[in-house]
Image (cartoon, rainbow, N blue to C red; front, side):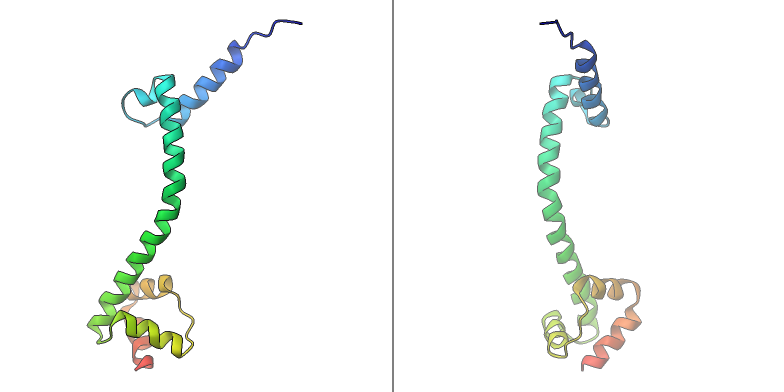
Length: 114
């Protein structure tokens, strides 16, 4: 069996790991072993926090909707309840965007519910 030298592939793997950890702090961006470990952790965190980001955004939307709807005289829960009863299919993301960027349109929607 012929001898296979792995210098080229080892160097390529090392460079790719270090390229991925560019911008990490301290030895995690320059030392191969620390960089590998940091990458593994980074992957785990990014996977977990992709899920967390969705719930975090939903909470923000609820806060934005609640803030403007209370100013206009209706609580968040009553607003969502009446939207469901009247079968108006606006989701929280759209309502939050309207509340933040176009409060006049949001006010008109609230008036149509009263």
